[in-house]
View 1 (tube, rainbow, N blue to C red):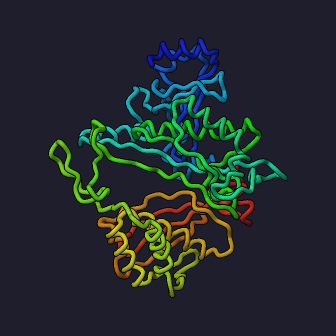
View 2 (cartoon, rainbow, N blue to C red; view 1 turned 135 degrees about the horizontal axis):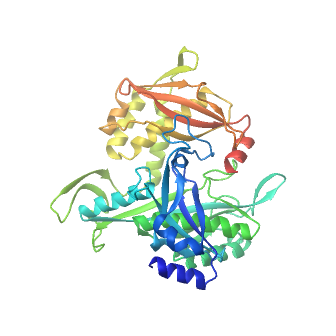
View 3 (cartoon, rainbow, N blue to C red; view 1 turned 90 degrees about the vertical axis):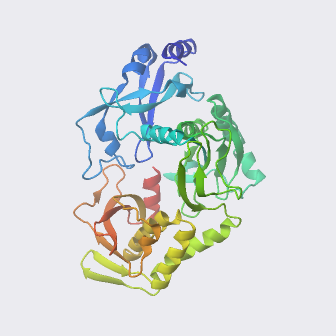
Length: 437
């Protein structure tokens, strides 16, 4: 729709405010609202936003050594193709925005513009991507200052369908009204946990759909006096929630799937432009549970029989087991996508063992070099070094949690230090409650 058509539709439907929304670097959906009377102008000029907002953490504090602060401004310019009238807030509309400089050139830190550039780069190679998020979430009620799952139903249980029937039906209706197609709905493993999947879409639309999805699930649940949480682990004694990202590769005309006869993205994909893309072998596994079991065994194999060495306070060295390193090299040669997960997962595990007994949750990292080739990350003689930085660690003014800064590196390959940020508390209940809130 054109801006004039959007203004006419919004006016005819009695819309009073239109939300300009974006998803920040911490995964938090933020934005500003604009009265309909100013909508036509704002769709052209955008709404101002301080650049420092992209340096905010998910705990609503400015990241230490942040690139941006309270000085400098960008504009939030909406994409008219994303306009919807919110069925759960019928006097409000919504659009997803791009972040642009004051001269309306794309801002380098705009994640949506980055995705648009990647879509364009793929198109130049005669490729297109479809994607869909498969979301799980918990429905809970407030009780005794905390949250309690809405039911105690079993996985795929019909009881769980009945107990959540009104809210799930309203969520599906609201998603449908906004142009999303629901493909599957069922109770999941945890008490009060639901899975509700939507149909795939081109990559940019799939990302925009995820914003619509998250907003809708939380808002409709609130209208039923429920709290919807899409957090990975809101309840310590229940299963975690996933947000699986499914994707497929097609030619630019979306006529032919770009895959091998074996159903894998592996070897070489020849484009119609005559270029060749080298893809690491990522086969479609016939037995994914075996791959998961292999992965689960790799991190323990790296540290089996090893002890921490403390060359100085707040600094430890962990020599990695040679048989574990060899197993990791074999694993990443077969499945290169495992490399980043293994490199990053081992760090919080080591920190948790170092600070044994203190409830902690990894909430971010930075400056992590990508090894090339992947197997170089687990070369013979590799050791993991960790340093706690009390000078950077601090209490969060918003959540009350302690934000611990740890530096790590895989020596001798990595000489510079990377950073892992951990949210910490004195007890597990406080940690989960504060992170959830």
